[in-house]
Length: 234
Image 1 (cartoon, rainbow, N blue to C red):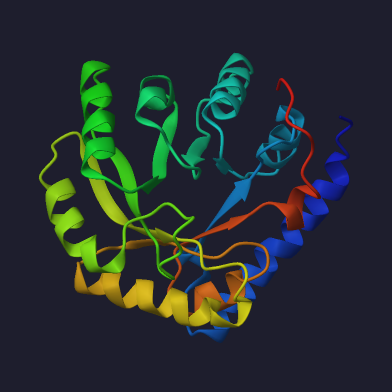
Image 2 (image 1 turned 60 degrees about the vertical axis):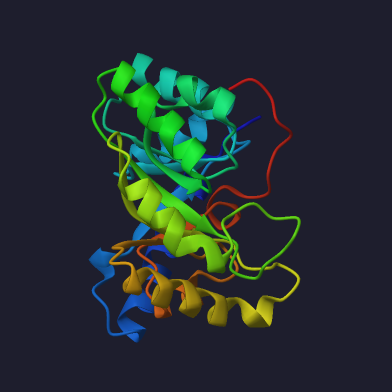
């Protein structure tokens, strides 16, 4: 796949400005909102294009893809990229992911958190920052902890030594776009009640509302990199 670096950088700068605009509209410091550029299915060259203009936080949905891009970056001497895993993580893939992940956004069980901690400790990586994924709309087909179970899960995970529970993540029901802002508000209230400090909320279509409700991490892909490409080797 051919990468048009100048187009990607231009789109990226527009998104950065829109994020700052959203933060100012919410009377927040733009520095309090980090952009996670979601590069899934796009080639490593697209990541490199943003790295070269100073961006460092990138998100991936697939373990193999994140690992391949992280290894390519390391081979290029890029050791300061922060890779965010934002997809559904299976316990059998934790071992290969953990050495590369700066943050894991979609933790939804104590079992998964324990496996992350186990692998981090075995590799002497220190505590891995994680977020709990909240199934904010109660969708049966979605991963994430139900709101009614969140407090107990947070308490259990906070006792696990090898992970650093920093906050919450959510993906509102895409079939109810009008309800996204209310979903973000609910997650922010839940997180505040639990003493959380990070909120991974908002994507290309709804990050403005997410920032208004307290998002500290917004996950934007299409508006920067364009439509997704078929998965291939990266």
